[in-house]
Image 1 (cartoon, helix red, strand yellow):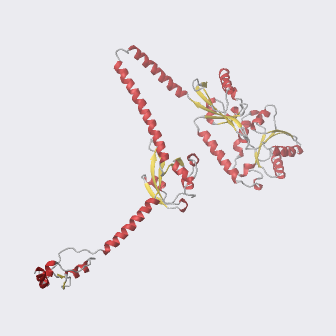
Image 2 (cartoon, one colour):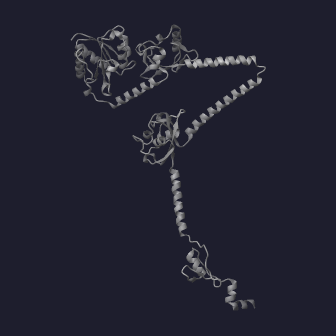
Length: 502
């Protein structure tokens, strides 16, 4: 096989040494690089016939490196091979980034065989599948990291601000689309370039001076005097990232053109207003007084609004009920401290989690989920939830909420521990049952009672005449004790009373 010049890119020194040995035994000359940034530096003086690169690397990764090389005409004939362990973790289309072939990292003998297959097929057939994937097994942690990486990239692409990542020596290793738009520089030219080279000589000196006074805290450039690039007024926020394994700089770029235009208009209006006030001070005292009152009222309203906002936030976090705001996908948007403390987490940790997973330890919502009912029926819905792991019954009330334009935001959820309420209700129900049992035993005398006007006997329902005490005893809980009043005693035993009187 004809000797080829190979540039081998991988941040793993063991892989670099192993592949260098394999390729040199094949008769090729090999140059190595530890990441995409150092590879681009090598390409300034080295023109390889073959580029073999890993995907996941610090600074500039393999995908970005492939795209940059494919945008350089001088490397149109360079054969690009991706050699990566993540080939088995996702459905990877290596041709989208400009690669000619993709090999999954595996045993050395297998990688050697697949590299020989790719090199021998050049100009003869096209390889569309990932070679060696059958000997590599997916790893769950790698899959999760790739998912996080995708979410991170989507988030950065959705930002309204530009995002750059720089090495300590100010080389660009990552950029989002807003950064390329603001700086008027496409991604292939922006990556690996010096951050200083993006500015004119005047602005470059300003940037360098600010970088020289950068310490551990973020630094803002262009807030008062923005940097103009391509008719845009830009503000740069520089954030140093220093950890045990990583040292880099994050640059957030904000387009403040419209903001400055509004500020200029406001300033122009204020200048014009001051001129008018100066000219008409004598005759416009009342107007000035009214204006001052209006300004004072506006400041008072702002203070009241700020107080209300702080009060609302304090109230939200001091309410003992579990309060949360969910989006349409049932993910937490806001959580009060009561709910966060119950779950043993900070409120920020819960943001973005599904409520049914965080609270109820379920993989999916309840069949009668109040959030789904409230959104479907466009009304507040209350449901009692009894889950043993909660330790108490929970009354959940969900109310749909909307954006200012009427579109659905999600729902506001209030969960209340009703164990005490249930206890009171049970006690009340027991008391009612006891009262009803007592009332069932109470006998009442009511209505018209047929009584003899002479002997005072009472006729019962069957027509029999009974003594008064017998009737009352049978129709109530009253009991009688017998005695003789003085009048009856005189009438029944007159001789005793006559003796007493003599």
